[in-house]
Length: 528
Image 1 (tube, helix red, strand yellow):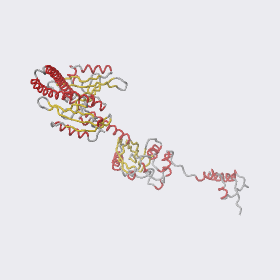
Image 2 (cartoon, one colour; image 1 turned 180 degrees about the horizontal axis):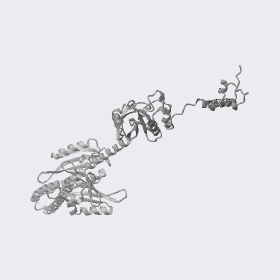
Image 3 (cartoon, rainbow, N blue to C red; image 1 turned 30 degrees about the vertical axis):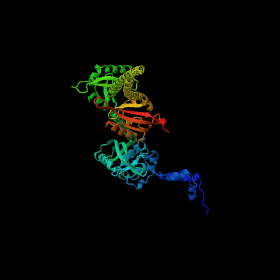
């Protein structure tokens, strides 16, 4: 049998008849009595317009609360809610629908925990929070999603649900599992109760964001500050920072406190902490630096400090720097003070100057003696013919005297020639107090860069493996009264050099050990 094909116009007429019938009229007065619309065949539906077929099959619209919302909005709409305890979204309570609408349309990380199980719904911005648990966290109870941090957040959830009062957590540490292991993370977040019409708490509105990098960065900065604070506190030089035109101590390290006698300076003016500084003109120097913005440097300044209230002032020799400190606007608002106590070095230099003067006097006496002996020899030659026997006797005596004087001259000449070798002066603990120009040239350094350091920590020995330990042993032997001599090869800033090296003790007239003299003769060119 051939099916009769119904035109689109015939279908519209039949639909109109059906609609009129639903409205209570049969429509016969509007349709000719002789008109019989053809039967609607299956082929007629298949050949109908697509718009007509869609209109006949469209499902009821979803609630507006879950419209939009990006990826998570789409996931919520596609979720099988009919088999979930919450049921289809069309049947959700108005308060839940409103909370979900706010959540999906917020650009801030937001989620909703609903019901006694705290079922989880969230927006795109919150999706990175559960990390690899996304998107499986959607619709699951909070206890199952947050197994790693439930011991932390469960009491917080319980407090909100039972009291109806919100919570705000700042820098809350949560040990979250990420990448297969538990990591410490930090968060700022809030938990706000969502109330049902009967005023009971039906859910929790949660917003927050991670601040882990911020907290860790701050921790690194604080650790760096602590490290610099320790370095500042333990610095060998005395250091202080003064603020304002009244020169108020802001900080001072241990060496500075030791120098001024452990007086507590922080928060007090220089004139109140160290009144003797004002009397000696140092406060005027600080005023000048603050006004001019130019640093002041002093070398070998004689300073009196009363380190104890009832004690007599002590005499010090100090090197110091007053360095202006400027603020962001370029204005001087403080002064950085660095002081080095060179009292011991100054005394050692004075002692060396006395020793050199004494050696000069002895050289003068030697020269006079040699000249006298030369005149005697000339006189003896004039009387050779008549006083032969006396001349032989006198000549023998003079020879012995000349030999003795020659030995003294040799010793003095060796002392004088130390200016042409590496030479220094140390205290009895091995701390370098002075060095001559040849020694300093060998390490390309100035005296202030090495004075006050143990000899083994200076550039003469620091770069040579094992040399430091050898020098410690040599100093120990010299302090015991021995003269230590050995051949050493050293790695110096000017290159490798070989030395005939000696450390000898120095005693005063009473036989007391007053220091050590290290000497090195460069024998590099004498070796193959």
